[in-house]
Image (cartoon, rainbow, N blue to C red; front, side, top):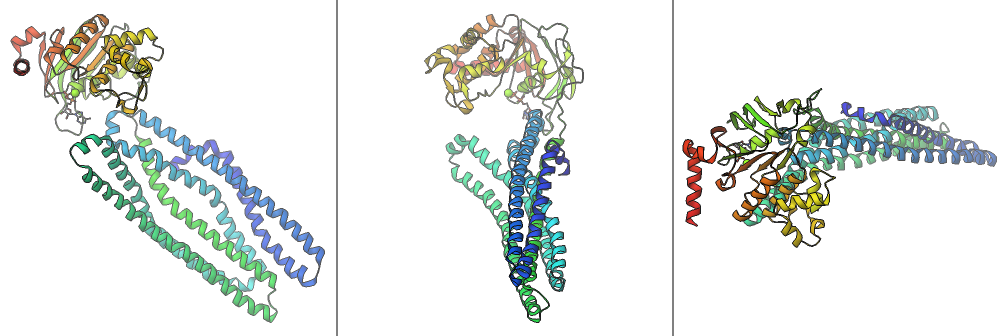
Length: 575
Ligand code: ADP
Ligand code: MG
């Protein structure tokens, strides 16, 4: 946790002022009972009204100053701790944004969200409480004891009995509470994960009539979290009545033994009253310490989880001195590339070599799981190759700045993702300054103009979150238009035509060919019809290239390709 406190540095001054104010307030609170005892013992006892007024006036001023200090300290502490939380969230978010997909997979989205929200809130609260209490508690405890001793030494043995008993109880509670607090954070993770899964899979859940099953699953993690939280609260429920009991017992003891002293004339009434107040202040400071005791373990569990995120050094980073290709043509080359996702035993790509030249179309075909999308992922450098190299215009993508690399690429992913906003906003995703005409042209080529025109507002029509108000095929066409509007040198279409009917597919491809005549085009497809005219077709089978050439050449030379063609032809004939 200490590691995270370095993010407090910008707030050092504010924290110092807060602590000073808290300190001042403690002194004010400590001085009041003593003054009150003087009013009682010297003023009231002797009927000295002038003394009562003068001490009373001073007490009022001190009390007001204490309140002002306390309020200001509260405001400052809130500002600095909230600022600290904001900085930390920004830090975690920017770190997560630089994660490679592999690193995102390790944490999981649910856990990353909990870490950025709930976990940071824990630490932020601790920072706030520490400023309010850390300085006040020891000051009040030590100062209180000193003041109590100086007011009435004859009663101080009572404190010697009571304080150790309280301290022991708090230590025992903390020991029992710490593991529970750690468990709570991971249980919140589990809850978030189940919630996310059943929300994002809501269609499947309903279609397969698994709503009850999901409810039970949620009830399971929910009950688990509740049980642990209850356990913690049982401990807390015990703590506060116990402290109250101790306070009352202490008061009774002081009044009892003090009363005897007053009777015998050893102790004065005012001192007795002051002593009771000091005892309360001391015990109150013990409670403050115990609150911190309770918060620290929970926050430190959270801090560990945040540090786990911050400590990842992203595997995909820009090199110190990035290289730029001498000429920006858009040639993509795979040189003996091998790659595995790590978790699975089989490598996803084995010894893959090919060149995709500008002005030509390279198609990649193969069964599901044959590694087609993996090729695209490696070109985009979502992952780094295990051996071999991927080159853009002769430069290894690992030696380029990621911005430069991705500025050259226009990707339409297998599962298109749209963002909330208008259609135009979505199309401008790749280039904010694209003109109206450029957008219209991109939509035209992507065969999206007709359905955009039908929508109310045209280009200004809203897309809802996740793009649920457009169909799968419309989504694909918008994703293609988005890639086109970017006007990159390399187009990557990962199975982007799968949801289109044959006619639209054909129209789109012929428009595309004109539009992308100078660019490098890489098309991943399942349908032979989509890629038949490509300049070169790469046939993948379980991560290996089993054929490369034109449709005609492959029909002669490649068994796997012939099989694919045969299966699809028979399917089409059967219709
Ligand atoms: P496709 O040809 O259908 O696009 P992919 O390139 O997506 O195939 O996947 C190739 C292989 O890699 C498959 O066996 C798949 O299970 C595996 N794979 C894909 N993505 C991941 C991932 N994020 N983590 C682990 N394995 C993956
Ligand atoms: Mg795929």
